[in-house]
Amino acid sequence: MLKVITFPIWGVFWLLFYLPGKLIIEFQYLFPEWGPVIGSGRRKDSVVAAIIKSFGFWIAVAVAIFFLVAMVSNQKEQEKRHHNFEETGEMQ
Image 1 (cartoon, helix red, strand yellow):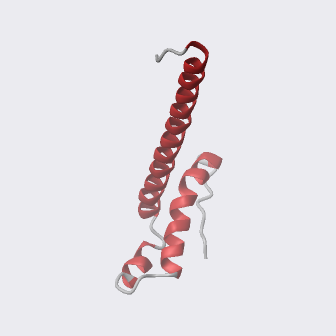
Image 2 (tube, rainbow, N blue to C red):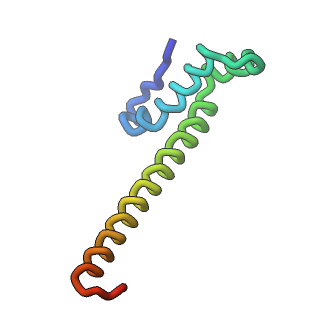
C-alpha cells in the first residue's frame, strides 16, 4: 500500500521530507472527493506529486512556526514594556 523510496543516498532526511507528501496522497487516494477520483489514482504512485505536496506541507509548517514565534516575541515585548511602565511610570 505505502511504498517508501529506500535509496541509501537519501536516508532519513529524504524520508522525513518525502513522507508527508506521500501520506497526503495516500489519504486522498483512500478517501477521494466526488470529482477527482481518477486523478487521485494517477497521483498515487507519482514521486513528483509527493514532492510537490511535501513542499506545500513544509512551507505551511514553516509559516506556522514563524507566526508562533512572532506572537511569542510580541507578547514578551509587551510584557517587558508593561513591567517597565509599572516601575518607572513612563512609556517607552
